[in-house]
Length: 538
Image (cartoon, rainbow, N blue to C red; front, side, top):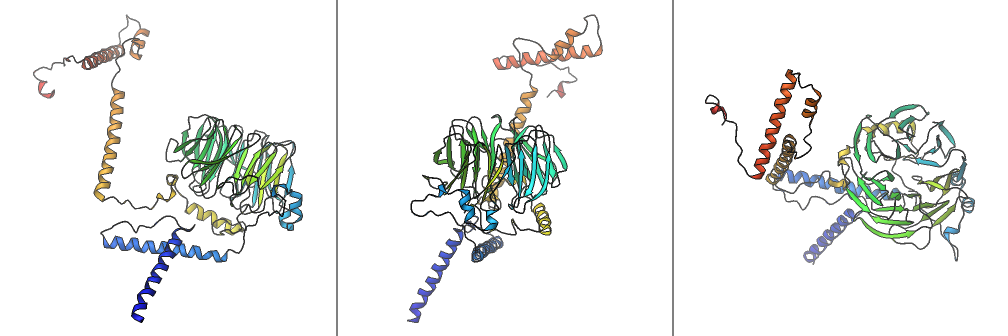
């Protein structure tokens, strides 16, 4: 019996191992499949790849085992009986939460400098406000301490924190200015003119801007150099956001299209016709799977970025002005003086919102969720308002990635580590997992493909250069720089330059005639050489 039972136990173990392996690669910690399907003849290379795959599996198991340490759960509002969650007001919510959370719901009345743009730091500790009429303020909204406040006496179109709370970018009337935490001007980006929207890529240290001229520009804030600039050829961009998953920039345009951009290509990677009018706001979720767009046609559409297809659509009474998606997938939409929050609106179409809020007599301009906190902030004509939204923030954070409670020493170390691990702009692509993949083609095929690509590029460049060198046969309007020069000179004046110009003009005329004869199929008489030079003409 023991000899019979042994194979059954072994098969059970093998099945359990396969199921565990499949569960691991299907988890959120997986970064794609391994290279087990690649046939490699070299034993040493095959052993190295097998060893790296084993390390990859161990890393996934270690990351999955840390879920036992996640003690916090995200909670949402729950209604009883006939109640509806969107009927709950902020006053009622503040009465039933703890004192620390209740202090996060507040309102700043700044009636003379609005409407306001806003931004949070990556760890959710600091808040940056920028009024359209020149007011800039940065402060810790939890402790109520002010970092800086200044008036630039110019129009402000957008504000953005850089890699931490020590530096902030302000898009003013003509240029983009960089300020430090104390409010001192550090740098003026004179190549970024009339900027309307800004985005910062934290892993690449790139500040992406787009303005009224329709140029998308990338600035490396660690070195101060401009990486690249592209002309969108679709006029001024009406909205801008980034995909946190792959660092792709999404731009909304007046013709209703959404274009996706990367620093490695001078043309748009993808163009989506999303609305019948201007795209007023764009938002992408943290996983990079869904995109929400709001247009002037009073439509709010949800797109699957993986397939570039529309999932479903919502209607708003007036055109939406701003969108944002929280860490837990809540969607905030502002239209007029209203702010509407939707729960699970990306995957399935909802019939009623999760929460609503009204700012009487004040048009909402910008909406942002605070990272790692159940807080939604929005800037409007009369200042800034912070709302308590249960279930919006991620309760469990990775302190080695982004730490909301970091100290001064931890912030310095994080900045040094970020600069050391800074990614190159060429690594930004639609599929960020292409780095480190193995090309399954044979070495001869790879070399042949590389040679063909190089040859095609060389032939193309050579043909373009030859086309530029060949003079065009102009049938009418025989005007050129040489003829204009001869007309300006007096006919009775002969100098060396005039003789050279006349010789060049005769040569150009002869080349035109020869090219015309070749196209028509007539023989071209070549210049006859003397007996002494005939052997050099071959």
